[in-house]
Length: 167
Length: 151
Image (cartoon, rainbow over all chains, first blue to last red; front, side):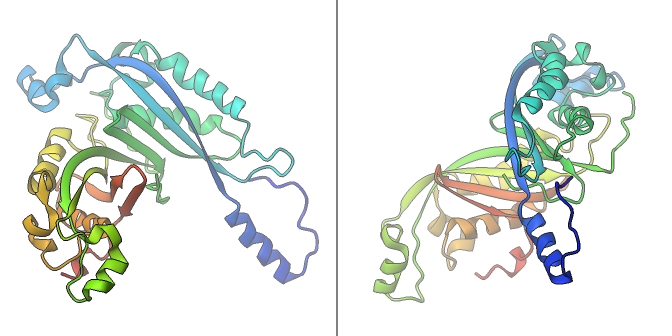
């Protein structure tokens, strides 16, 4: 995180205190969006019977759909001059460009090139969304992507080594 | 299917929510009646009371490129059904679950017991159990001491 101001020549003790307070001032910001999309699960390397056995109802080739809810969490320190981790308007624009325009009211098997060759499960969609968003978020750092396929099923994607389980 | 490069920098977890209804009574036989009443209040009512529990289970692991899944949901549902929902739903935790014969069935202890049961799930690593006792209370357990859970 870029900080305004310079540490200057503070005594050693003061620098340590500043480092501790930096860690403590980390804030998580979450924005939620919803999109509707259709999909089905089929692996052409499996026989029709295997596909039906493994994927069940999700194997229906005519597809089915969900209202997905996406929660995007960004970690950072509030900028002292704006009080913001990042401008919510910027995050909204990123989510609109990278997620809504690609996925909302689309068929995930046919219309999202980033998912080509993958089964569009919640896990894979969450990972694709992480890869799309991570390079775009330049203030703060992408902390977690949580994608709900239904209120009872979701996938979390976060940076390896970070707990990321807190809800 | 194309093989998807597993990105080591990111980790994926699958979350699933389940529901069960059960009754319990908070009472510690090692403490006196008055002390139990003071400690547990209404929850000490000898006839018990119940909740609609919401159980959230998080498992993590690599995504199988052939299925796109960390774990097959049908298998996870069947496992949670067998280990937790069947023995807990519409039951008295104190009377019907042997682990709570001598352990107070607070939701903290319920988290630990459910973690102990679910960590045997063979297809993925159990990361977290979260239980919502009411819409205003929830508890989380990420493992660590479930075998030392005092009974």
